[in-house]
Image (cartoon, rainbow over all chains, first blue to last red; front, side, top):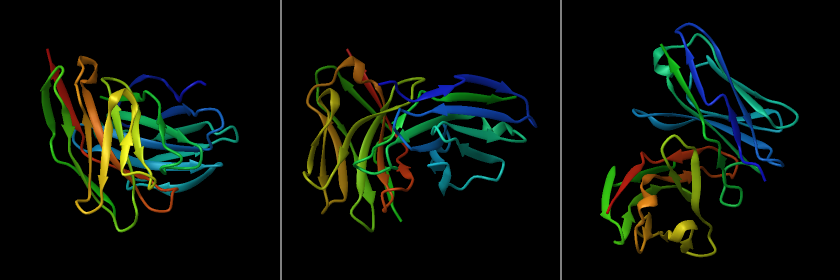
Amino acid sequence: KAGVTQTPRYLIKTRGQQVTLSCSPISGHRSVSWYQQTPGQGLQFLFEYFSETQRNKGNFPGRFSGRQFSNSRSEMNVSTLELGDSALYLCASSLRGASYNSPLHFGNGTRLTVT
Amino acid sequence: AQSVTQLDSHVSVSEGTPVLLRCNYSSSYSPSLFWYVQHPNKGLQLLLKYTSAATLVKGINGFEAEFKKSETSFHLTKPSAHMSDAAEYFCVVSESGGYNKLIFGAGTRLAVHP
């Protein structure tokens, strides 16, 4: 079974631009979550989608948004990029959502660098 | 609210010696607990998960963790370290309800020396 696939692996953008990251979950998984990983803040939850609906959201500004398609693939968009948005963005999928009987499976991430 | 504290930011061991990575959690409910490992430039891989069925949980690659409610701890251990175990390890608690976000610890970087 193929794992979680994130594209692209690396991105370099300039301040003020916008960016879209893509995530294809494991086949059959309906929940997709996004996390931001930085050296200073560690791993922080961005949002979770389940059956095309945002079910939970972390404490990030409105510049961060996402969506999920009917095939469970998800995209994350960041508008008006700031230097502090430089991070590894991780996508994770699960059958139903983060719980002991439905653990998260992570992709290898997209490393975004904002200059 | 749930939280998790990893007591050591760095742990260094020699190959073949035991590994102990410490984690304390705070939860108002019966928690779901996990350990994940992250190798450089990779995503996170699930090592093991706690279910209420057993307090001693066995995971992949010889790792295990013991859930101790009285101590609110979920320490990760391995009897004998291997060079390939060098990575960052995250203790994670899931908020109640089953559908909610994961709360990650700050991580423990494990170094394994020959």
